[in-house]
Each structure stands twice: as structure tokens, then as C-alpha cells.
Amino acid sequence: MGVPAFVVTHTVPREWVYEGSPFTFVTDGVESAVELAKAVADDKDVGVSAASIAQQSLKAGLLDEIHID
Image 1 (cartoon, rainbow, N blue to C red):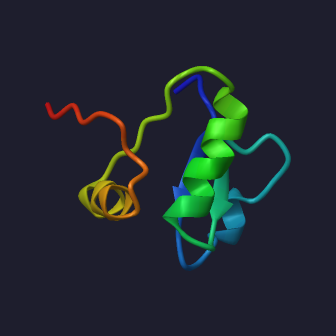
Image 2 (image 1 turned 90 degrees about the horizontal axis):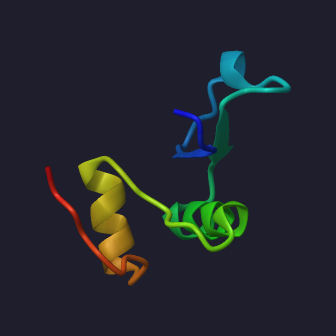
Image 3 (image 1 turned 90 degrees about the vertical axis):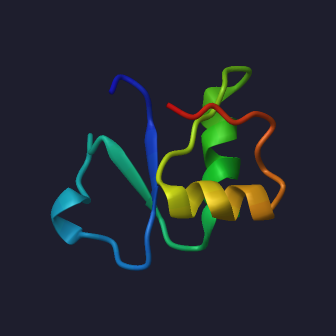
């Protein structure tokens, strides 16, 4: 993907935890994942995907815009 990816999960798949992994797994909720993504993105946009994550982000007031394809 060429950008950092933060994965919200209850269980971290150990086979994906290694130095240089393309994913950072976040187990303490969507708010934490978005906060981490914003810190890494600096002044760039942060995107979310998957219906459940988008719904959680909406409910938490974390989304400024919505684009649906």
C-alpha cells in the first residue's frame, strides 16, 4: 500500500509481528488506532476502511469526511 496501516483487532496474529511488518496492530480500540495514524500521517489525510471501523469512527466523532465507492 505504500503507507502505514493500523489494524484494529482483538487478537494480534503473531505471524505478522516482526520488524518491518507492514501492519501495526491496535488492540485498544478504534480511537487509539486513529490517534496513532494521525500522529504518523502528520498533516496528511487518514483513511479508514471496513464497515465496522467506519461505523465506530462515526460514532466516536473521528471522521471529517466520508467517501463511498
